[in-house]
Length: 223
Ligand SMILES: O=C(O)[C@H](O)[C@@H](O)[C@H](O)[C@H](O)COP(=O)(O)O
Image 1: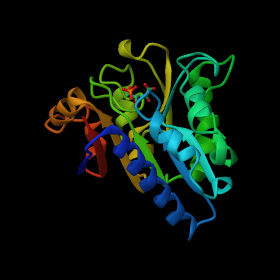
Image 2: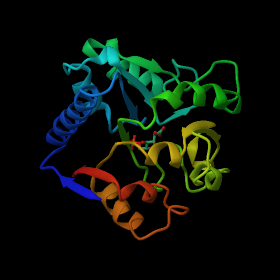
Image 3: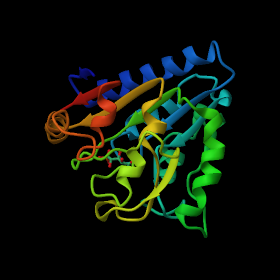
């Protein structure tokens, strides 16, 4: 695990956006397209805003979330709504976006269609992850109903999942889908999440799902 500490949150956001852009551009020098997997939640917003104005060949980049709350795209809790408001505008509007949510369906019904759409994009070029203070990442919650299946080596790429701490039913990329990303960045801010990270390092992924990704991740942190 590489841990990068920044003097402030603005420096973190600018530096992480720049690193992600460089990794995408590097990939595009030798591949037809690149893929970018992003977390929901609020911490990434400044990184998304910076990326949206970054000069990249966005028309060759496919963007998708690592997880989604199973709510309509205009619902305040929608991660897709977050991406549309903070990333998929300005230069990044040219990106291809794969929405994990399907209206008038259960998340279980979307699994196979999403796996089919996402498979050509693996291994993911750049994955950014967030983390909750319960040590979940994406929607891999410690108390999730199907966590063991979602963390298994033979898991499908995408799974519906439910957890008391999750709010709505979720759809999530699984450990297998995320851990093979070419570049993994974990973005955390604040003292509480830093302490949570230190705890997670000592735990098994079954208790601390984020632990499954730390060995191959660059962790970006500011107070
Ligand atoms: O749908 C979600 O909630 C996210 O994908 C989730 O995994 C998020 O990254 C963490 O909950 C951290 O969220 P914050 O950055 O808002 O603290």
